Image 1 (cartoon, rainbow, N blue to C red):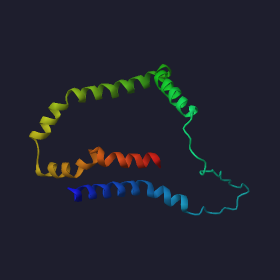
Image 2 (image 1 turned 90 degrees about the vertical axis):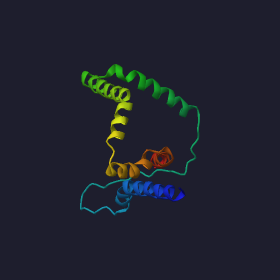
Image 3 (image 1 turned 30 degrees about the horizontal axis):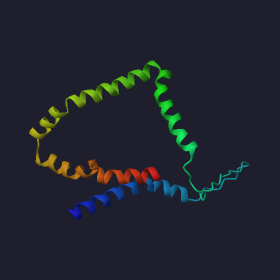
Image 4 (image 1 turned 180 degrees about the vertical axis):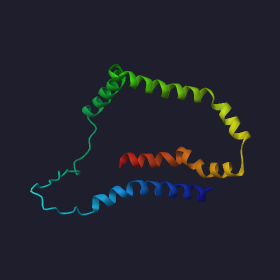
Length: 138
């Protein structure tokens, strides 16, 4: 069991490195110099400041929640259609979940078992949540 966990963690780290690797490489490349009359400037950020949890931080949550709740009032017809389709498909799949699972189990094959064995760790929170947390912190 520990070997499977280790392989899953390595696969997750490889996936994160693959996804973010290109952006790291791009930021480290020297920019080509052009004989342009316009000078590019870069904004320097001071990342050494301490992060503090203060009242403004928590007030941001309140204003964000308020904006999320009232944002549908500004939606256009196409937005409502998209939201309705997503909600309808979600509700339909939710109500048919057991039937879908039964059908998949009845139609199992050696190929689907191998695919399932490979994909199972990606649906387990023990493996996906640390990767998502790392991406969030990035």
